[in-house]
Amino acid sequence: MSTQMDIHEIMQYLPHRYPFLLIDRVLSIEPDKQIVALKNVTINEPFFPGHYPHHPVMPGVLMIEAMAQASALLSFKSMGGMQDKNSVYYFAGIDGARFKRPVGPGDQMIIKASLIRSMRGVFKFGATIEVDGQLAAEAELMCTVKSVA
Picture 1 (tube, one colour):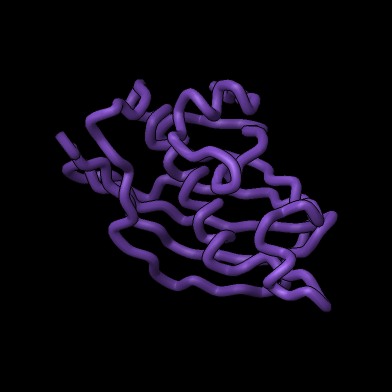
Picture 2 (cartoon, helix red, strand yellow):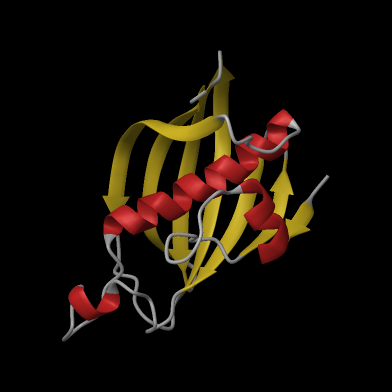
């Protein structure tokens, strides 16, 4: 089963809001397998005036965050539910992060994440970002859901 999600459904699953919500649309999602999402990068992003005024570049940490948000959506869809108010989705580790090309205004990031494994509430994903068919970033991410209540 491969489904799509618009921004309204994404906001039901992720607690992030402007300026930190970094997924605009889910193109396809297969629970327990993979997700393909997109982020339209515009000159209006709040980080561009300071990174860098003479040549705007999306910060690598925000590219990692976009991959983590896509991975979180895949986790929640795989678990069959949404994050509740008593839990938070945390990073547990980032391995092999590499940045292959800059991302700037006008680019459309295609974010892909595949579930590598899930054990005792810890999820491991392989994730990439492509722009115009070129690899822009890649990483392995480990995430977990923890109770905060």
